[in-house]
Amino acid sequence: HKGDSAYAALAAAQYSLVTAENACKWATISPSKGAYNFDDCDYIYNTAKASGQAFRGHNLAWGNYNPSWVDALSPDDKRSALVEYISRVAARYPDAYAWDVYNEPVCDDFPFAAAAGLEICDGTDDGLNAIYKNSSWYPDVPDALELAFTTAADALESVNATGVKLFLNDYMAESSTGVLYAAKADRVYTLAQQLLAKGIPLHGIGMQFHLDLTYSSFDGVRANMKRLGELGLEVHVTELDVSCSLTETTCSWGDEDAEKQAKIYASLLQVCLDEPACTAFDTWGVTDKYTWRGTSQHPLPFDENLNSKAAVASMLEIFGVESDDGGSGDGDDGSVPAGDDETCAELLSSVAARAGPVRRRAALGLARPVGSTTPSANHKGAAALALLD
Image (cartoon, rainbow, N blue to C red):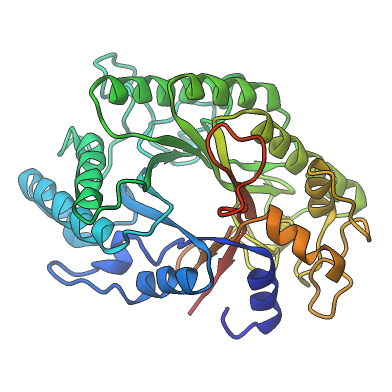
């Protein structure tokens, strides 16, 4: 959406952390065997650096949406391709803040998971099939996850970039309580324990948080973040959005719905601030105008006219900042009031995404040093901007 000047102005004024949604994925960078095209990923990375924004890479390995030539490889060739690809991509971006090294490796078993087309855990207890979902990599390369992390770490070390944080990112594993989340959260926790015991360079867990207005598992999120922190891991809220409904394609939207949404955003932000392990808080989009969930779901902090919603005011309130207008923008560009610009820029960070043709998304959040109770002056928080073709 580079042609949307108001959107670009909002993102440039408010956000300081950039995540490429599709531009840095395998299917974009290497759609054909032996061919690499870094143009889109380079654009995001270089734009972030030029703007003084942190760059969060997403992702180096994923079991889905890979180019067909990868799936056609033999197991041995898949292993070689994984190492070669991650080595080249990770080393190319030495100033990254973090990478989602492996995205969504863990299987599902919550009610209606099968009906949703998700990979169901097979119920065996061999330490692998009970955790990993079948994918481009598993079971052909049974140690693909471990290999991805060690390869990324080696590549970054080769360019003296050992400070880049390496994350495992997954969905519906955010809370250690509740029928929809607890079992998968336990599997992610067990997997993290196993990886750390083997000396795998895992630095943190990304929790996606694709929610709707019924969400209330804040205590379970707090407990889950706490136990992951006790393992020495960081936690990033990576893809937060709060839709009107996860089961209905359209729904009504009014002030009461906006207030429910605001409470969820604020409650999760408060949990993140309370838990030292939580070092980044990112929404998966900036505005309802551009969201993978659809404008009618109203999932993001700014509405389709780029006006700040109640969610913005509620998050500012958590930081002790009063919103002049209760969450509705009154600037010419539809952003938050001019008096709040500097404050928001200090508190929020931006995830900018140059999305591909499928699932165009963007992201909003906060980043801080491990153990700190306040946002970092260098990594101020995060909201994502979608720069689409």
